[in-house]
Length: 363
Figure 1 (cartoon, rainbow, N blue to C red):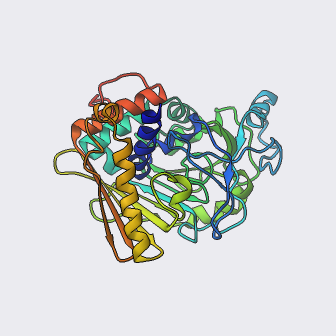
Figure 2 (figure 1 turned 120 degrees about the vertical axis):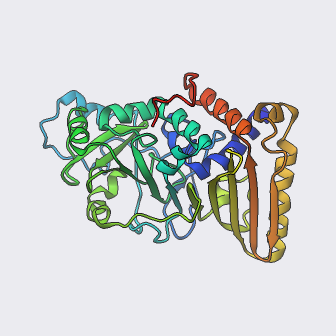
């Protein structure tokens, strides 16, 4: 059991960079809220499976949904069901990059263009939550999506932050799908719906052409004008994804020491067809940075048991760290075989059917 838990934590280090495991956060369990960093409101932490989720809240508190739209009573009851957690952002900045506790940018278009990225995208397209989103909105973020960007106080995707998908689906088909999903209209804007995706009650917005957004209930109306004008965040050359955590120790407590105050994680396709993950952290002092680098290696060594090495095909055999002044660097290379192993583990964890990841029906 200890090896399984460690494997899941290690898998999250990789998955946080790709928005993959966290992208299916609505299907996983949750822990309670933790003390937040000063710059952001309350947020929830990752489970051992590497997923953070929204704070639970009674249905009807802070409901952004309106009474218009003529939705059936059953649909309204579903959208306000007490079984659903309510996505809440709390007070704080609404613009991306403005002191947020977490941000994530994924070029899903670039992901599909790489061999290993395509396998991961295909896997997540087949999860129950993503298939439900496709059915109710006409958009699969990993297939029709071109860019996914997420920001807010929570380390999660599609659960408790501002989640924006730029897509190449036909807008008229998206409008038909959302109108027929059975969701009540929200008074946050037009079109806007009180949605129930990923096990969370949030508000679905269509703030611009070829764009859908899942946003927290309590800030939905305020976010409409922000998302209508926001500029897409940029990735660096060769990057497929970039995640930034303001307080990485909150989420990766067993891997990253509290002295690491910020962590950027970047995913790039590798020349051998695999993936490269690179992390860069900001430490409080050079001495603390040296200790943090040692802690990462020690954690990898302790939990890289024979079972883990077999399951991952040695994925964590060569974790690299480097402390340069107050900068901490972490590196991990995944060969194509190791990506296949990780894909298999993710499928098993999320109950995804076994399919050929090179299926040419996946664009």
